[in-house]
Amino acid sequence: MDAGQFLSLLTTSKLHFTRVDQFDDKWEGEAPELNVAAINQAVASGQLPPEAATAVMKATRQFKTAIFVNCWHENEDESAAMWKLYGTQSSNIALITTVDRLRQSMAAFPEPKVYCGRVKYIDYRKDHIDTSNLFNYFIHKRRSFSHEQEVRLLVMDLPVKDGTVVFDENRLISGINLDINLEQLIVQILVSPKAPAWYVTAISEVVGKYSISKSLVIRSSLEDGPLR
Image 1 (spheres, rainbow, N blue to C red):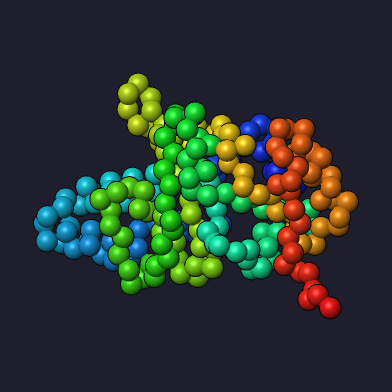
Image 2: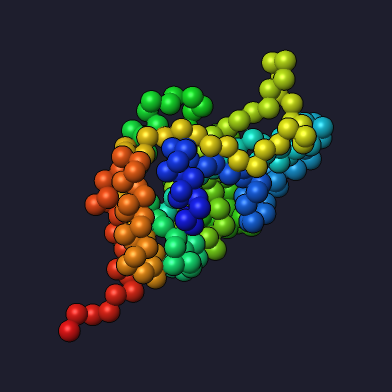
C-alpha cells in the first residue's frame, strides 16, 4: 500500500474492501465459458426456461456490485515482483500477517461476516467453476494473475429494501471499511527496499503513537547487496 493508505489504516483501524467490479480485470466475478455453455445447453434441452437463464446471468453480473474484497499476497518470503507491481514508490509499505492473525483481528467485530479464500487461477475458456457456492465466482481469477498468489477476504453487502434484494445503481458505493484490531493483525511492517533510513525511522515513530511496537517496522532488504 502507499503511505496514505497506511496512515488511513493506522488512524481509523479499518481495512478497506473494494467492490469487485471496480477492479481493472473485466473477468472478475464472471462465469467461465463452460458455465455459460452449460446454461445454454439446459435451455436448448428444455431443462431451463430461457427467462430463467437470462435471470441467472443477470444475477451473476449484479452480484459483482455486492461483493467487496480485501487482497493479500500469500508467500513465505518477500516477492520482488509484488514490490515492482505495487510498491514502486520509496514510501510504500507492506504489512505481514497470517490467516490466524486476520481471524483474531476481526473476532471482536462479528458483523458483517467476513469470508476468506485462496484464489484459484483458471483458464476461463477451458475451465469450469462450481456454482453451488456464490463466492466461488469471486475466488477465481485468470491464470495470467497467478503471480499474485492471492488470498482474499470477502464481504457481501446486499442492497435490501423492504425485505427484498433490489440492485439499484444509485445506491452503489465503491468500497467499505471494516473495523480491525491492528495489534492482533500486524506481524511486521515492511518499508520499501528503496526507502531512505530517515523514512523508516519516521514510520517507526508514527506507529509508536498508535500503540504498535516500533520494533515491528523494518526496511525490506531485497535490494541490499552481498556482504564483502
